[in-house]
Amino acid sequence: MAGRRVNVNVGVLGHIDSGKTALARALSTTAATAAFDKQPQSRERGITLDLGFSCFSVPLPAHLRPAPAPGPDPEPEPEPRLQVTLVDCPGHASLIRTIIGGAQIIDLMMLVIDVTKGMQTQSAECLVIGQIACRKLIVVLNKTDLLPEGKRQAAIDRMAKKMQRTLENTKFRGAPVIPVAAKPGGPDAPETEAPQGIPELIELLVSQISVPTRDPSGPFLMAVDHCFSIKGQGTVMTGTVLSGSVSLGDSVEIPALKVVRKVKSMQMFRTPVSAAVQGDRLGICVTQFDPKLLERGLVCTPESLHTVHAALISVEKIPYFRGPLQTKAKFHITVGHETVMGRVMFFSPAPDSFDCEPVLDSFDFSREYLFQEQYLCPGPAPAAADAAEATEKAGQASAGRCPRQQWALVEFEKPVTCPRLCLVIGSRLDADIHANTCRLAFHGVLLHGLGDRDYAESALPALRVYKLKQKHGVVERVLDDHSVIGRSLFKKETNIQLFVGLRVQLSTGELGVIDSAFGQSGKFKVHIPGGLSPESKKILTSALKKRGRAGRGEAAKPQEAERPEPAQPVGLSLSFRRYVFDAHKRMVQSP
Image 1 (cartoon, helix red, strand yellow):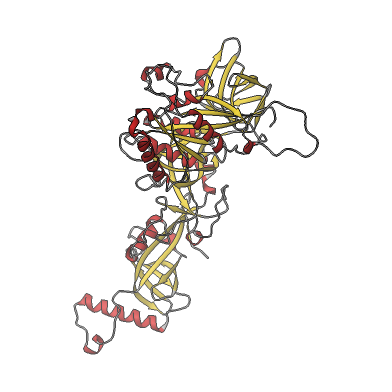
Image 2: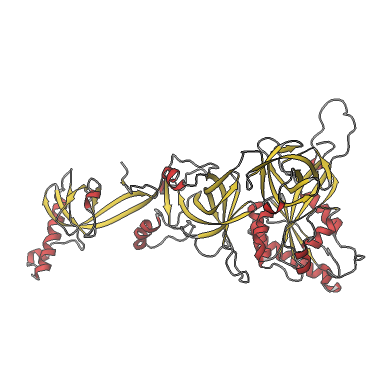
């Protein structure tokens, strides 16, 4: 660590016009090639349209320094420094793809709030993204200079309390709140107006920062957010190192272009370096290619990433999203800096494993999973009359219970390149941006990618997701002690031969096996290996006599009328599993 800069990435997020870029400018001492709305379109419209990067550095604080090694005093070395890279994210609702991409490379988040307005729609979405993507938060109440001087402190205290209440039910409960005026007088004020509260903010930031473990081993992977060419030098890609390390002379692959290039030079905020590791903000110059072909994307160790057409992900619903998450629905799926449309299918562990299943960070193809019509959310148990219908329709065995982990198959409309275990966010970005609703629907981790273009035939049959099917019929008549005729279990046109050999259960308790079709009207013969019990024969005889008299319009004899008769006929139930990706659509029953 001695002599080098330790880099930490701090996101600057918030609603449009909350003063994020002004805050980044007030904090920064060095700007990257893309910082402070340098794009002509950003300046023309007066808003941030893309990620901006800048930094400042301070001596490495004591709480981040390793304990000195025992032994004689080492040779004096340059003072290690903490470099804080600021990731300035746009605040406009239509640019949420960019916000999500920026949030995935940050270690700590500053949520910037216009103190005169409080929480706004995009402030809330940024808070949701922060809960998914980072561990720590600082709330910055900006534009305090716009408050009347005599009432300023009281207004700041009120807003700070309001923000603490907002954070009460989030992972950021108790996060610090600090007031600043990043650009007193507004954007048109003269530069001579000094920002207010910046030294205090820097002190707070440094105290809150904890450097995540940086692992230089493993394949190199960098998220590229800007790309441009330098005449006579080559093409420069700037981004954040997500994993591994890179050195001068290494070969790197640009998967989106299917090309490999050699690293000619590297810089960190205009300072030449010979190597970089996970967490560093970096510019890499490689041999020339057209920068217009790679606005955003990934750069990696050659052949370390694969392009996938579908993926199996662990999934968790974002509680602020209104409405259910339905199987077969389409969502905007964000993986890194890429957002594509994808269709989802939800599934869970088997019902008897809901409470005991461990949460896994890999996908087990040897297990069986239960298909779900929608993501299961905790809620009140339905009435008993609705339970059977709910079981068959949604595959839910126990109402009101939820598994500890749920999964989804995501089928992308166009292939994406991404590492395993990367963050996945599902959104409804086509929702009205002016509506006060959360567009972020779910998040998860990519556990397994399906790289074969023909994955539906080559890979999905190994995914053992089943639907629970239940059919109900009645016993029409008894043939003998070991045989009955059933009806109402199948439609007239059903090929009953497909069901021969499947077990059925009588409502009187006996188990039977479908033996054959009986006639052409959907009736069938059931063999009962253990035979009907005397009590069952009595109930069946009684029920069938009653039905027979009712059909002929006869009145019951007095002595028979006194005998208690069942209110309903004897039922037959058939339960089986059908595997979603079984091309033969076989029906399977548990042993």
